[in-house]
Length: 596
Figure 1 (cartoon, helix red, strand yellow):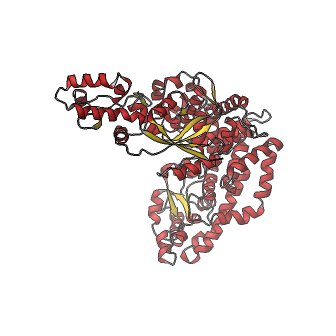
Figure 2: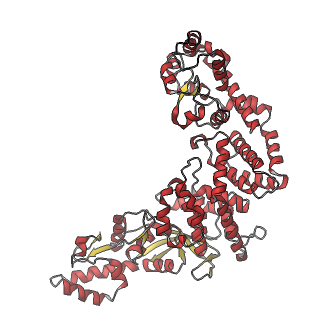
Figure 3: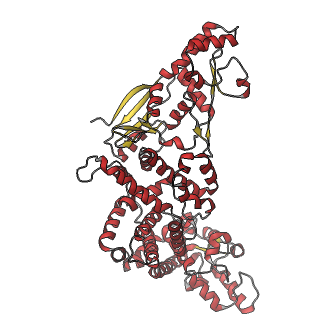
């Protein structure tokens, strides 16, 4: 069977199919991003017979149409939303959604004498030579009536020229647009691949885009679920937009969904700001125990996993389960409790979490564990935090993580979360991991490395102070009150045989410290600045930081996993210092993990 069909369709037919819901435009309720000049240029291209690119549609089985009936094969427009929206605006006079979610009109004018298109301005509105809004021309009386009125206002106009221009303008409705229709039996990944190969712009379209498109085909309910995802993600970043949504999106405001997310208007935490890809994945895991976008689409399409055929009776339940999962995700209580769990594990800033997928699964796990009445909130918190850190330590959220997620959920259901987590720890976090693998993971110049960020989280969790700091802790420094300092200064290493960034920027050579301490150390090696501290302890005269007691200095070294021989470290024994510190850092991480 062919994967797609290519055909030429008149503009009027495209608009008719959109009006009748035969073609669904998922983006209609999103802000229109084209400039009015681009709408004008599209009209000019159609007028002159220039190509305007292909529209790409994908058949959606079991979609709800207006009036509640079910479409056997509705087309979802997956590429060309802006062009079709522009056509609806310019030709059909339909409003578009502005940046503040308000509805507004885009009026395109046409001058039959100069054959020029333009965005309507006050000057154009006062001119009799212009057709002020071409949508009124297309929806108005006959061409003959229009021409008679035009010549009454412009008696000196060249009638032949105007008649020819108006006939060409009317011909825009009959201009042919290429439509590529993708077959309904294609999976999401194949659709994405075809899209990339067809689309000359090479614009990436994620599998989550197709899920969003699929959701929007389920009538009013589907459109509002899609908006719930979209608005939740938008408001988690820009809470001030709530009033714009409430005032301008009447359909959504009239639904029960608006109240579910109104708490975001005053929410300012930036630790977890999910995008719609994240929300879809979490909802798939919570609602269907499925992590792959293709599997979520199959569920929403009513695909029977046993017969591999569409069963439309399954669709209402699938959307109900998906909607229930979304309600859990956007709940203020659930979301804020989860974020507090992650913060209590030491991850107090979004920059510390390199894997959004680890966060996604942890949230899905928390939401599922809430259905287990045998667990207290404290037990859930412990499980979620430990699972989250285990995921980061083992790289469980990279590669084909969706399949891993589905397996994990199945085994959690079979064995229980606590028992299954212990099995993973036994197989993946044994002595060899802590003594060999983890120190090797710390052989890295990337401060974004998961192992290093977990080390910082461990320091936050135990309230460790910054390197050589008497009172300011690591948490305060991560929040903007400290510097990432080279324990053995960069310039000292460069001058003494370590010119490569990968050498002097090893994460084991980094520690958070106060800015004045960082400035004072400058390019001096530990052999020198640690001697200053020894003198400071003996005399009480401050030269580097404020530590004046030996026991406090030793405690600070231990808090920051600094080897005891730091007082003898310079470029000569730098490799030995790195090796020793990696082992200490790994020990700190292990103690932290076991204490979660």
